[in-house]
Image 1 (cartoon, rainbow, N blue to C red):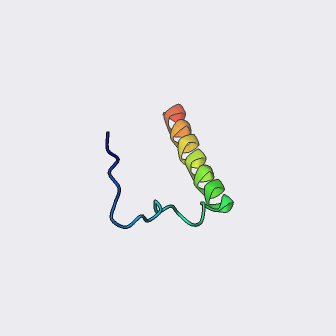
Image 2 (cartoon, rainbow, N blue to C red):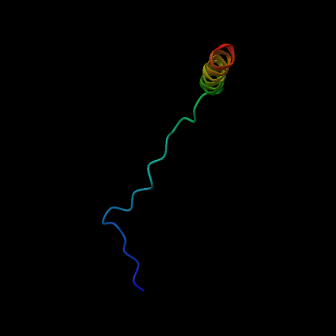
Length: 45
């Protein structure tokens, strides 16, 4: 089987900077707040 190669052998584009830890923690915290708010809302009804 013949391997197909592109004309310009460029590396696969990857994100240069990984997501910052603060951003991940902020997103996680936001999801926790939303989930607990929904649970509290469902429990109080």
